[in-house]
Image (cartoon, rainbow over all chains, first blue to last red):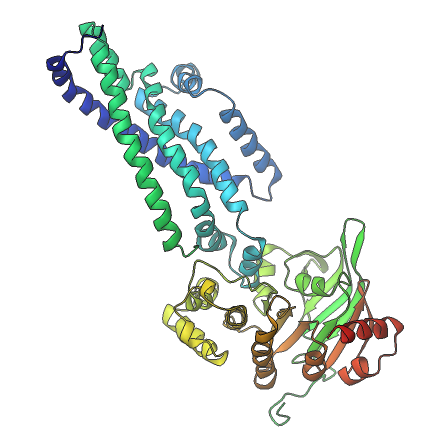
Length: 222
Length: 270
């Protein structure tokens, strides 16, 4: 039934491996954006400025409640109509970065909420500034409980990078599509894509668990 | 206490170290401080006793500026703490004013509130470095001296989770002292401790009272300790001072019916 061709498989493998680096790059950049912007989203919802808090919360809710693929289309195709023309990579990174930033902000928020109130009171009694309280006292304690959630979203963003193919980012799935349309063979390229994703996701999940254990110990929370 | 070196108390011109002037604080419908007036002189040691919900912990919390007050003004050495002067009138303190004023106050909490991700010495060094701008070497030296004073220098490199409750509380005292406050607040510092380690913490506070020029406000359930260490004891009831006076008088011979009931209840329990 299946007509698997090994010589074809090895012929397209280098091209797919090259595209894998783009996938990893997209996941890496997107996740970095998400980590930073997500923290800003989380902290933005904790200020005493009500307007800012409400604006950030609504923004996060909006992003979380709409599909990623729509957001990618929106940034890429609607952008130019309002005078913001972005390359596929840029548009894709903004869309996927913001999307995961809203999810990560919830993870951060749960982590920040898990730090006992007494820690804040100690910061205040010791006259530490708001910024130093956050970055030296509160966030280091909020991170360990947040790491499992952060790890899940790292694997999540990696698996969502194929969405970027819709605007022509040459990641793994996009390349497999190209191979398919050139050769009319889809079995091998798509199977390879699946195997490559698996080959990266599984060790990554394992590594993240190890990292979590290490981080908890390094931060002295265990 | 060494009377030769101790400064003269209550000169007429000296502003009190702490002054609560008609201070009120509400949680919803509940009034926790009810137009409280309270003066505490520099270097005075005042114990606050009273039933739970009487507002005694709130006195410390609003003085530490952990919570805002709803009415009245708190002064620190004659300067408004909860407020600041602007154009001849008192307005709510800005964050900057609070940070400036707060640096004279230190607080020790019932549940220690040590930073779990830092070692004992790092706990003590953190604020002197980050808030006072001391060099790490200066902060380390200052912290080690204080850890030695509270008898815990050998644990400097440990994380708080490795320490007993009594040891943690002594670290918390050293950490607060590292900021060189003029006023120290002790909020039920032995309530979360096992009975056998209460003594070691009280000893540290006794030592502080004897050696340092500190104004101390102590919220406590330890009547014997309050009687021995205090210059004055205040009995709080429903957000007000129901009775106050020298410890022998207030604890030994209370005049107010509420005070008598409270004391007989807690002394029976001991």
